[in-house]
Length: 462
Image (cartoon, rainbow, N blue to C red):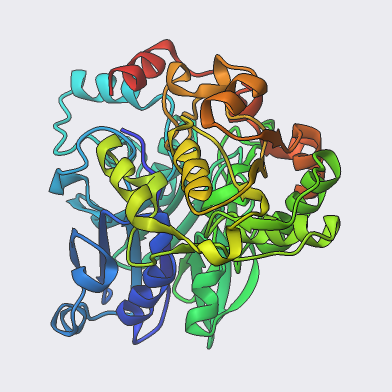
């Protein structure tokens, strides 16, 4: 079970549930299948969660019942497995010997299947299929006495991507895996500590960004005091921040991994223009993730920028629709060309990636049907050749067109006049750091953690 999600948490605020609702609203792009909020008043944890967008899951009556001063929230998007099971909706809330606990998880554990089998051999009973539930069982079954020790004991067994918010009756804990795959930001709202997957959630509620939770760091807040700890054994982990966050998933108005997503994407476009120039009349983005790199390409090349593809914003992101049939329908409904801008023009169309190639081919055909004389496709990332096992919904290697086709062959398949990708080196430099700071496995197959064969087989099965 792999998930790509958004998390939000706040401590010591009388409007904890409402601010968490707003935070999840800002993070809606990270998960559109379900949402949930758990709140504690110091004695008990109350929660509400359901399938759907944040605006449909939470109404005034739901939020009024979520009374308390500490809250965690979660937007969920499942990339495979039982996305229709209510038991997989987060936050996961359990009662155990030490009290109650709620957990919200963004990421994917590569040793989840092995851990789950071991736990089941010891008698654990699972309600859902999420690897997040494995974390809960590891905490509860730990032989340690204090909760922090139980948590550290569990974290020491995990391998993979996890940005976690854990709430007990009296504590709020933020955790980022030793490799730092997923972003997790820390801020402050009128003296209340807040945590979120992206800083755009802070902007909405008026919170001040303080810093990122560091890779391998545990930030514990209890009795108004904040303390920082290290995950056992995390010192030697290779820093592996997901560079695809900059390419596609994060909102451009967010700051992640210490960098502005907007500025990084714009630099992607500038470098793309230098690496893959072509004579043309207009630069056209595939909205929304292609807009900022297209601006960079236009400014660097001097070719005018035009919004010649209009997006219907009432349609969800096609990349994160679970079924291929839904993706195909989404492309037709989502984008509409402006013929007046395209007729007789040589067009450079900018997109963030080519995964299977089917969407790109439809876009090229759409532009030609609207009157484009030439269509030159430019991609603001390198060819996606390898699947991700750390939380992004890429298909198996066999389904990734770049894994078995050359750039020329892909160009022929999508029916473009030319095709150019941003180089791996250019992408890393634009992101602001050496390769040692990022996970680029989906582009070069260099996985920072060994992926068990059982996980690879399971991904192909799903």
